[in-house]
Figure 1 (spheres, rainbow, N blue to C red):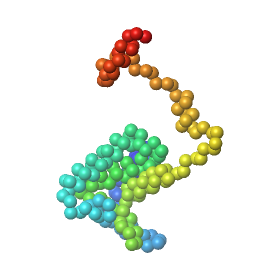
Figure 2 (cartoon, rainbow, N blue to C red):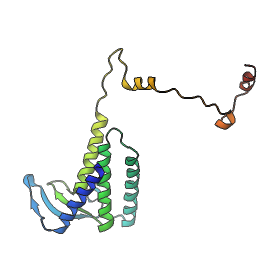
Figure 3 (cartoon, one colour):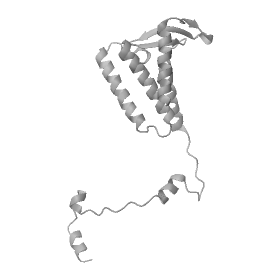
Figure 4 (cartoon, helix red, strand yellow):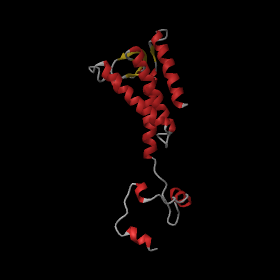
Length: 181
């Protein structure tokens, strides 16, 4: 759901920016809303790569990200995964349809970006914050939740298949020891 919302907001703002009806706009703190086209990737880098290489590479990365997010990555923050996926799909779709990425937020002494870039950045920040979050300290004699869950989990069932079916071989002597039990 987060990915879909990020994608819709990104596409809508790019359509408005491309229409030229409202841009340029000067905002406080020197931020300008002005139309820009980025044929490269982050911050206009890799513009010298052939377009086919750039499109295939980015498409593969977005496909891997999509599969990972749809399989539940990251478990700690599904919101971060949704933001990453929505922003990546938004920029990829823009690149494939237009041949460039539409950027329109210009920050002084920085670069020009769009809301897909904002979603990707916030997704990364959320992942970093989740990874830096400290684990609660365990007081002496207190059992952590993961240990408690492992203790109450159902025990693994022994593999009752013959050794040749398990892919392993019995060691010499083990076969005879079983016979005499």
